[in-house]
Image: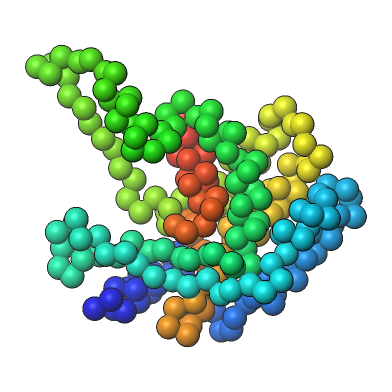
Length: 217
């Protein structure tokens, strides 16, 4: 049942593409090229370069969390990719550091459940005339368009007052690589995520936040 649900999700050729081999070495070459470019141009330090190149990367693996609260049998799965120790995770962490200030400036940004509860406790409304409502995006992480999200990031970086030696275009190159080369393994097969991003990637929440803010506007 578990494997069947995983395969049901992975068979969606709008979101995933099956690969013929492990792409780790190819991705490592692309990362090394970008990092060397950053070093040669003085955009990053040697310490940052060492951080960005994972010497002994682990292969990201795909798994699901059953959505038992949906009251379906068998329950649908929430797709997760464990990227801890993977070759792309340092890029994700590096980019997220630059994106976080923009995320926190979003007017509708909600940090976590505790923040929401505190906010709700301060609201006063007429229960006879008003009611609280919520809006949900179905499978947000797997549905945000990659190229459009990168365009949003580009606009944010290039229109801001920039005080870093690392230029926006280099961060965008790293983000593009981390987002569009997002591969993983399941049951000894390799896949590439061609639409959206994955839960499990450090900068995935930031990507979702900045894109949804753009969508709301």
